[in-house]
Length: 143
Image 1 (cartoon, rainbow, N blue to C red):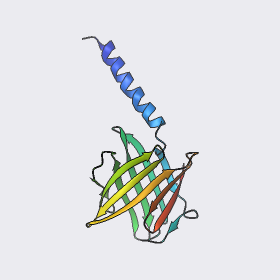
Image 2: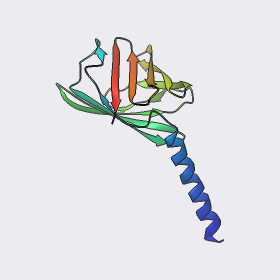
Image 3: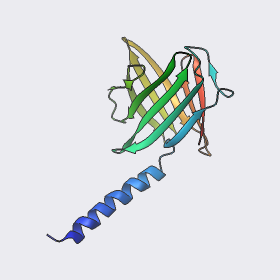
Image 4: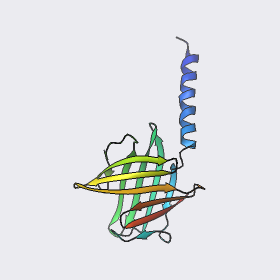
């Protein structure tokens, strides 16, 4: 076996992943803007950062928050397969993600038997991420 076909296959796969990442508006680093947000349910964090990276045809979201009790980190796996997936760390729950259009995702959360539905939307210019959940609207600026 020669290395040329294998190297070409590796290059095609790598290039495809880069193209997918470039077309995914949710990827990147997002910082919570408390001034733009309206948080009426739960504790208001001092700061919150979301880092979204491409992963297996979807993306992985790592969320770090600083609040009066210290810090917490949780990981969400955005698999658009219609199934609930367990979050890791921080606030354990199951979430199912559904892509409504290229810039809007519906998220259905199941915690202790209770179901809530929210939405995540990236602005037209790609500079703002708005996360809407019952009782909260968190607005993040892209860094």
